[in-house]
Image (cartoon, rainbow, N blue to C red; front, side, top):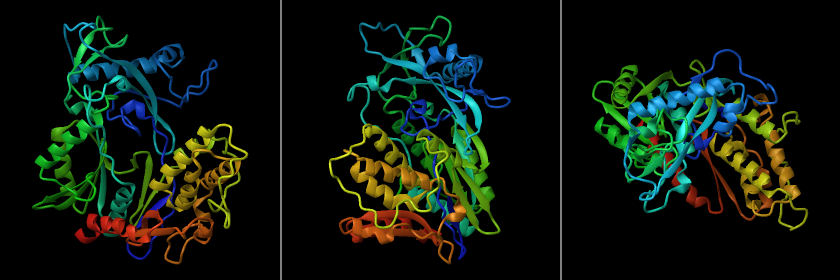
Length: 465
């Protein structure tokens, strides 16, 4: 759990981010850009006739065999209608023999909120981008994702200055950008009457294509620039709008999610109106749930709390640690890990998956485990049982309640394991704070290089507020 505070009363108690299906939206982490999908009515389904209805089907064949197929079928139809309305593809007379095609399929997901509660069923028509040929079908691949420290910094500054923070979700974001290459797709069965198996030319950046995230990022940059927003020279996912009447508004871009932070509500409305004039958006009003992170605000205490109990529970369940005894610290003092080449973990990928998940958690909302995860990441190639036990100990730390966390007198947590530095070669830990809140943790062999991150944070917000 993460607390971003203003003034002298600061508490930073980290938590965690949720598991997301990147294939559904054609980017490494995530959630889909649109609201196309079947909504859920009533309580969440449970296992029935041998099916686990709490997890999405792997493919359409499985979805058709499940008792909840009507919900997935509606999500499928809504997705196809949206594509036809937008004109994602156009029919062509090119045959399969003359032109290479990229296949597509439906990918399913069950959308949940930060607490892990089911909200709706979602289907996404996704291109099988792994069939694309570099140089012919795409050039560069990236998507607009801000630095984790930038995200925390903007919440910390907002808490300190009593700014408003609103959330805008761009629906079917990638489909707002035009395809930059001549590409042809073969429509899957069930798309529409008479269209199954047809060869069509792709007009828009379909989810799953390698360049979809990049094309959307370029499109968004051009539109925000026309609105008068300027891009930050430090983090390209932060924009600043200086309204002549309503003042400054910062825009944080996380793929298809936009976070607006500023003092004036009128300034918010002006920015939202400009963005909604360019794209089809959902106005989520004051931010409550952002990329799976639950945002809780206490204006009297000048605090913003970031946490994600749903993802923490999912990770613990995935590794069978639901009933584990919580750890107060991620790693015991004096623990020494080394490569011996003995007692190797039979499934090395499982260790890598756990450390990778913990690494993501440490960069987002749990910087207190950064040191322990940094040590474990050195043993990814040939993990041993001792390394796996140490990783499980860090995972058990996620079970602990925020009340058990150690804090300094000013409300900031004491970084764990600062007394364990003897276990490694000369290493330095640098903490970067904004308004008495830890927004970034950096582990370096050379402490002098950490001044670069300090300058980044200062350039982003400190000198501009």
